[in-house]
Image 1 (cartoon, rainbow, N blue to C red):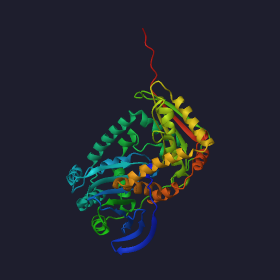
Image 2 (cartoon, one colour):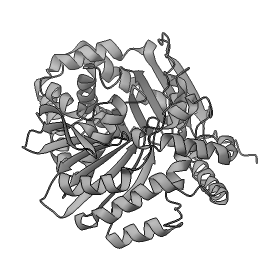
Image 3 (tube, helix red, strand yellow):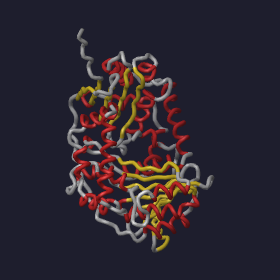
Image 4 (cartoon, one colour):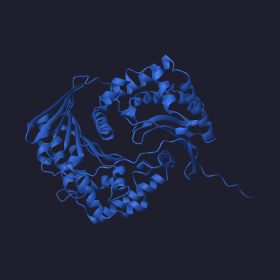
Length: 457
């Protein structure tokens, strides 16, 4: 997750409440945002959370369901101890129930005019989302609640979906950039389950039993492990009436919680080199270990990455792309897993070592000299432009709330970050660079094309 994508330009006033609206649900908190909008959190007796941000400018809304389950959990679960089932279930959730058989969900949501309908799985969460005309809310809630509670776990369909996921995995293995990123996670983390891919291995995918699938669904797709986020044209009375009707009778479950293994401090640079048959030029990834999103240093690190890589005047773009050494060059923060990543796709006649020298030069520069005021302001303005664009969009706003909820436990973390973000000074970028961008705490992955065999006459 790139943290700069989720920052929100806002100063918010938070009003905590614990008012019981009705026996059917409780108003947990009400939070007034910088522009006068009011975000409200509700909770049902079965533990289901609901976050509502009304917007009535257009007769549309975004509906998202976030489950606190990802590949980290299944790897640490005593009954599973492998990865891939969380992602497999993302696929299975579109397969149907007794009331709405396989294919009906997509058919009916398409008739509603649903847009951006999809789902994603990551290390720490799984989410489902769509945007619809607001007059279709009742029907969508019926469909979404039905598949959450009544998914038809058919053994034949499970096997069919395993085949689809194995196909997805094989396509991923043909992508040298994807292989490089997977290898970076394995290199950065020696203990934590971030070192295992979210999709799992072919052996793991094919090996999931019907009983394991039943356990996973009944345990983790429970109301007390889910949060509904709605941004758009509805209100409390309308939304909560249908949420209570369609979700209120679901039973909470005991959710296993796991302690993440502590990753030992890295004291020496790690380097991995590989070849890939589909690579046409070198790919370079460099990861520096950084603290989690709750750390105040994340804000300075985020703006540092923008200074280095975002916009036509960014340092890495001018040094690597404009010079012709690389096709693309970027730098960004990944939270869960926690590292600052440099990524470069080299031009065919250039090598990863050239790019690494330039990255080292730019890192040493920002560590030894305070960023100039005009460069600092440029980076800050790049961020602000991105934020202004994002807060206007219902889906992006919901994504921000959901991701921060899952990664930090606080869906308002983005609003807190922006308050800190606006207080930064150029010297703060130098400070975090010196603190975190050190060679002994970094990992390097290089993926090259296969060597050309000399031809025989």
